Image 1 (spheres, rainbow, N blue to C red):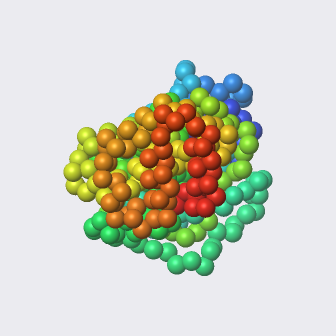
Image 2: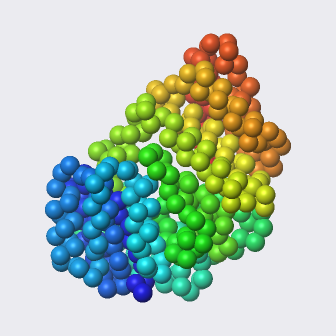
Length: 347
């Protein structure tokens, strides 16, 4: 069994995929300890040719999965999970890279701590520097043991975690046992995977080393889709699907406090806070539908003990009580901008 399976979705990443795969095949843990799945999402550039060359150079490590339809990142990752056999799973975007010691450090902490998930730190980068070895932060590492709701709140509302998938390593058996998967057909796909993971994890290790490099790529899929009106509601769609997953799998029966707070902050607040300041407004029927959804799913949200401790609750109530029949959606936009300026996204 390979130690770690690394999944890399790729779409028109010909400019970047070589440095990404170079960073993976030169890991100090050894290329023979890894299986690297590159899922090409019907690229229109030379990505396929480049990945094929890496597969030829490292036939026991790099596996190329070319898709015949464009399915976006979520479905691409789901496909690769079905092939993965490593003890642990990692996800890396095709325009990002890891420092040489990254996988070795992360894997060792996972094994020694018994953590189902290991989180690590990232640093923004604007160019690839093969001599870059700066990962120490001076911050002490933490093993968070989650045994009750208080521990879960501490994990999810203290800034120790992010919704993204690319700064974490997951025990593969944990992923399979909890049926973790990504939302498909949307750009904001990760919450469907990471939120159930955080709601299930018992041991979370935070490795405070900047081992990942996040490339500020203004040509990336997410950077471009986030500005398009047709993808305005992707976040809401993902969280709507997530609610039903949590309900069907019994999460809400066991303890609804944390899922309720997360849903209100993400499905409702975050949707508006992310889009309206970018110039993507909402029509009255859409806002009314989102208000009705919150009331149907969590009618007593105003008494949620987590939300009661957050500065955003007052604005949440004002948005929930906004009269969409008034026709003054410009006032709704103004309220959201005021929310963004005075509080912002508290997650």
